Length: 379
Image (cartoon, one colour):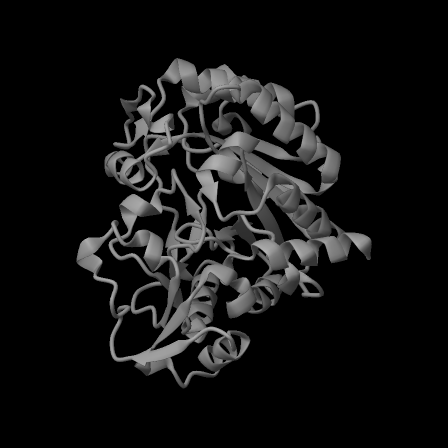
């Protein structure tokens, strides 16, 4: 009980929903029962019904200058496109065959390195309320490919749990995926907003995941996010509720004292979280679209890590030189491997076979594929 109270206290202090100052509702979805549920939960936040797919007073043409203000405004709207898509990977590097549910765009938290700053074209938060269409799309995909194993995540274009106190989406998706025979859902977050996960019938098919980093990076470059202790306490609570866990060291950032910083985080991870509950751990070095450097430097002029030397990778993203990436990966892998459970899959995100062999001594194809390795970690 003491652990659970500590989690709820942490949620109250750092829940990203507290940064939202106003909610705008697209007129065409205002009467949906799901929209009304969200507005009931948001009783203290001002609401305005609008006739359009935009937020008044936030000019999209001024993006990204108005992104900081935009993160305080939430638009509830209809997704007019597809919800369910493959992860936007590249064939030049090893991909894990991840599938993405696009539940909305942008995030109330603010990480200096966030690639969404260079990917989006408007400043406000969006959440798609036509969840019945989402579920129908998933059902159709599963029925069309009944023999396929699906690894699905909601954290590609937003944080999976940052708005969950308002949206309650986890209470829809987790039981839904729990009823599927060949699917697993990953909820990836930098928050400690996990209260809605308690008591759900997840059937061991939802994995709750946290992005982790060296604590100086978490303190200085991940604004309005949960602390390391808050994330790990939330993870331990989810494990106690029967969920399996995942952790993502991504992006790994070269900074003064990085060896000690990542060593401390890894030590705390395995001190606070049961290792046999961890399905997978990913490692991914900092990489970014070319426009991100200018955007981040203008929004966060005190940040310094973009001033390092980078090359342009095969995917067009800026990356550390190969030798530097190998140094970073080898250090973390040497720390993780002896502490991790033998069944935990430790893998590199978007790297070549050559880097895999240099860091881990094998390539994914030696074990079937990266997708197969991750499927084994689940079953």
